[in-house]
Length: 141
Image 1 (cartoon, rainbow, N blue to C red):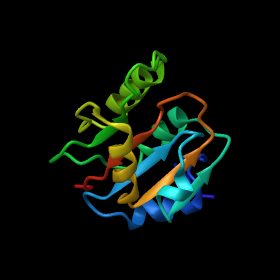
Image 2 (image 1 turned 30 degrees about the vertical axis):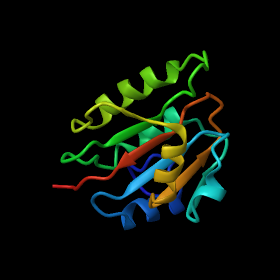
Image 3 (image 1 turned 60 degrees about the vertical axis):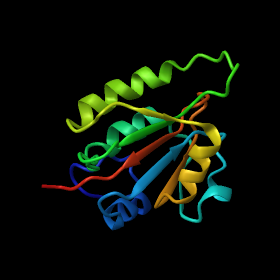
């Protein structure tokens, strides 16, 4: 146990975010995201929702200030599902990092391809649809 480290952040996740460098990307996938087939470095946070993980993560993880730093998976054309979690993410990101620039939308298969190149994927228990996020790491100044 350590002081001031959110308990939702596992030792494995802390190790990974410490290893990451400026510009490396971290995927936070919902419960339906194909984490294991997309990336070899998967951190499991089953039973946790992405909102709580994002809030805790942004207490330690700086977002890139020189490039777009946060990405969401676009809904498939014609899918009428509502995505209120996106509004929640925006509030959390604005409160958690002054460098947050807003979310850029990425088409589903382009999101998967980008996730293959990410440093790691966090697999969660999030049940909301289209809840996947990619964060680009910045620097601690």
